[in-house]
Image 1 (cartoon, rainbow, N blue to C red):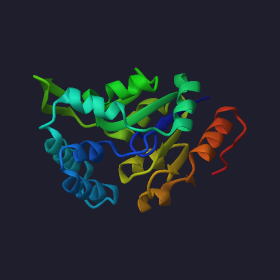
Image 2 (tube, rainbow, N blue to C red):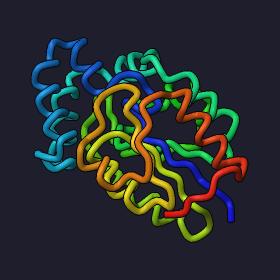
Image 3 (cartoon, helix red, strand yellow):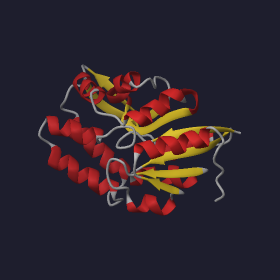
Length: 209
């Protein structure tokens, strides 16, 4: 059976949280930090938090946000793994399509990502059309492949828990405690993560759990 790798975006592929980085640009970092941390720790339901965070940032033109996101620093070794294994890898993020399209193009993942979607008019978000539930992506793919999922936050919980191999990544920030409990492995360095994923891809690793 083939292996498919599902990657969270924020603080897994990137070295920064995307929405807080945007919020800092408009002086809303404190409000954003509070929402993000409550979500990360599982205190605030993700969909409620995400809607509030998008509303907070909706005053910024979409094109400006897309430019900011495209310049966010990434974990280069993880991106190299994605490029080397593009046909078996997907990025799974609740971030909006209109915000991340340029970044996805920049790292060579056009057409290889799942995300939330928004309606835009006059360069402004007027409506969130869909908020992605990450586990729904896994359900779609699991019938045809073994799933390896990598993430760091509480909204990755179901994706990690249901994966054949679930990996929590703490190379950028602390892993959500709930995620550690359901992960097969916790890895805190991107070089080690890349080596481990490559071993899985090459059939040099067998999950005995």
